[in-house]
Length: 504
Image (cartoon, rainbow, N blue to C red; front, side, top):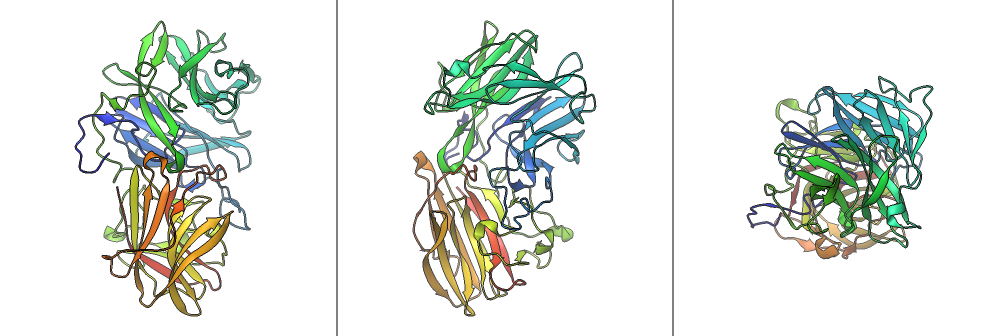
């Protein structure tokens, strides 16, 4: 959504932010969507919409996945780019199901279920192994399956209570070479399975890419029986918009929800109109993604997917809004929104020497085409060696914050060079109130972040250098704004964030 311009219809992308591996269902008049957030917690966000365009985070499938050093950023370990990956979202016989898989537990598949997707807690089971990019599917005959894998797609049947694989029913190869519509030597084998059934036929969506990392492509296989035979073809090949599936509206229209890799902001969702011809879903307008859609206009991503926070809580409420996620598992003893009314307090509880290993970094998505985040901080209780501030979080990160060295405070800007932090600029600080800001520009894949500070919240001064952001596979996530505080010498200090404000 462009500030100051009133839109009359929806535009692609429907979400200009990192919401990848989308799975979507419609229940009555409501749509629900899940996505991947990997190493962030709580995990597997659930979003709701009544028009396919305006989405709000309403729940998460879990608070934390496991308790282990990798998840806790302990012993120098981490799960960057791991955690929970592509989820499957289903509604069956009055129950909602979210399934996902993880690379770091190691190797488990998780199934979450609830009667109340918006408010209810999820019942959880897990079993081995980890079924890659699987699609949960309830067939009309009462059987339940997972379709999984890459290129050689396989199918397993689950037992009736979905607590594991059904005994005595061997795994089968569903499609031997699912990537064949993309050519003989695909650089990305068919994965991201999502299976649907319409008018008695089965439709399996996958993403693949031709040889030499050609344009990412959506392919569909069709069959009259779940065990095949399957026939496949390219379904959509435009702008690299690919992985996803099908959704219909109450009035009988059809769309395909897919995502596009868009530089450093991450993987962003698109809606593609669908028509049915000869028993096949035909995607796009003359094979292209339309810029505009015959759907209601977006009202913006603020405050439904990202939001400002004054940290003021009524009646002693201690929770954070759902727009926030922690980098890895948080230590809940070391943060509070009740210790000081109207402030988020981040305490230090151990020694860390690296920002990416520091615990309790609190994050929100950056958004495109441009976005800006700012914070107000009280740094009076920092200790020698502490470092706290605002981050643009990815493997190639940028930081603006306050350091305490020799009992003197300084505003510093840090960037990265070959995975090593580099202090670019340091300015003495002689007060305990400081304001920090990061401006991100993702328009036309410019992918730049600039860092600023203020002593009064009114006059902003640039600090350091422009960060040329880089989307790296070791993190596999769009850049995030993050609030951080860690100790390098003496634990026990803390900072108070008065507010966090985000805008286009």
